[in-house]
Amino acid sequence: MAIITGAGRGIGREHALLFAREGASVVVNDLGGANDGTGTDAGPAQQVVNEITAAGGKAVANTNNVATWDGAAEMVEQAIDEFGRLDVLVNNAGILRDAYLAGMEENQWDAVIAVHLKGHAAPLRHAAAYWKAQTKAGNQVNGSVINTSSASGTFMPNAGQSNYGAAKAGIAALTLVAADELDRFGVRVNAIAPIARTRLTLATPGMGALFAEEVPEGEFDAFSPANISPLVARLASAECKLTGKVYAVQGGAITELQGWSAGETIEAEGPWTVTELAERLG
Image (cartoon, rainbow, N blue to C red; front, side, top):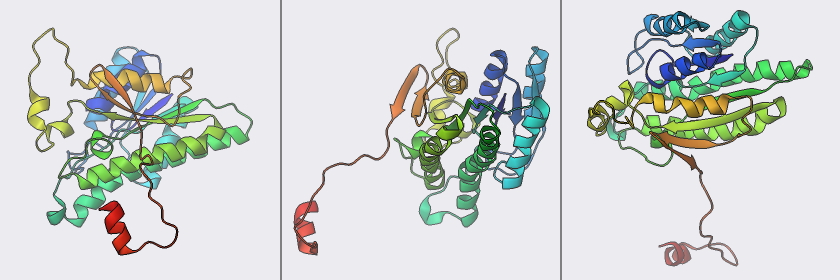
């Protein structure tokens, strides 16, 4: 049984459809807002649910705001009430409010950090509490969390996206911490950094034209969001043992990402002086 946030469109929709085809019951969460997070619309989540049920699968819609503690808690409770358990959490919801730092408004920063970073932390917190309780009750847990980072927050920073990049870098770090914490409860935590054609990437300055290029019929579409979901499904699988990993995924390529690593070290016999640092560091 899986919760997938931001599953009304794009990559999240592909996740939900694939999970359902693989036999999972799915809570399809989507607030239904615009690219910048404004507005609500129950339609996208319900449309995906309709597709799943029409094909014989099991799914329910959820339109809670995952950037709120209460909204995330209600979503987790709905999953357990509807399907009796929670096995997988896929955090995918996101928005864009791109701006260069010198002109960024406070609401542009706060909204993006809230939806992406808090919108991962809140569902993760309530799912973790459920799995902890199950473990304490003597029930064996085999859970999986897949978070959604980005190239913008890991290996390919993008000008004009300081809010988005900071949130996505935070998600990568959150993944590693959560993997360390939740292992004792039988839960694995991984993340992906996908590159695909979505309404957000089509709106990304300097990149939209690339994603909008038409692919001749019959040729492999390297930017199709459907290319992302098989990795997520594998990471969600009860047989998968991977945890604490972050993978870049685009088209047919999957690359394991590694975070900050120690480089060259310089040392002194005593306290540094500014002059010495100028000589040693430049």
